[in-house]
Image (cartoon, rainbow, N blue to C red; front, side, top):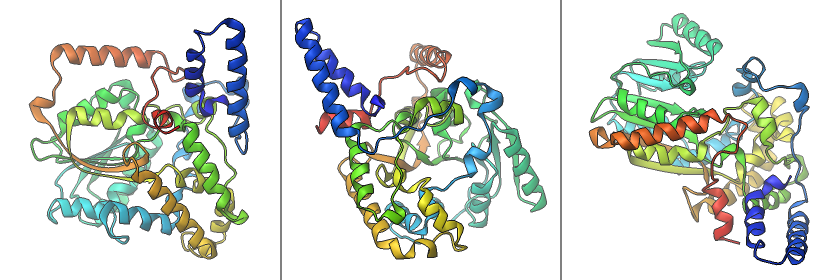
Length: 392
């Protein structure tokens, strides 16, 4: 459980190296006891029998991982809260914003990365945002399901199996729209992926749009954020209080090795190849871990047929207070403290193509990093982790 802030603890250890050995050991013990005293309350780690669950492709990727479970946006109150931040209107969502950006005219040909079973582009089509499109996903069962639905409903979408984490080139466009809906935080070769998206996107008017997780790698919250999560959770009535578990990396690597593997690199990499015209961070750092996979709320929702609204009606004021606290937390540093963001961007064009020497450097670094495998802590943590150092 020292993963809660092991980087800050290691930083404390480094500062002790100059002390005499005995004094250093005593001081290190004091730091350790201090950390454990403050953050031992309510910190629980999800664990599994790792010896009997080897990390192999055959037992790692199950499509059920992505559409099962209860998430914070299963609550209509959360949907309206996020809509208000993104569009200014709780009844208008990011898809409406995309159509408004295009002046009410539909995009002609969209590429949807990590399309899953195709529900996003089906909604985009119904809303008149897109005329047709191509969807890609690395899971064949999703591809088969999406193609089956498109054929049955006579929809202008075609789906292909594609794995960007194997550096497979994107389908040839040109596309005037690329949609990343909760896909990029699964990318391994993230620089390659964004370079490919910029390549196949129509220039200069093509649009990249995303609604994605851009929070800490592997959900490794720093100690200050985790402490705030605990405090806000304790304010909730017992009926909806979360049983908090700090994300265990080893468990995540079994359930889904791709989950949030380079999530903090998304915005940095995006800006390397795209010009951001609109960005709306919409929070989640506090409310998401409390409301997502909340067993008590889930049980209420199982008894409710109206998207959980009636099941949590009597607690809507407490939930709204939690969402408001989440928003206030984010306001101090919108990009640094938001787990999720809505982005509209355009490709940089020729000026966005790295020089040959820099491209070679990027590729060498990425290949070296990915060769280490998902079990490795191969990056220096940034963003949320630095936040604790800035605000002790």
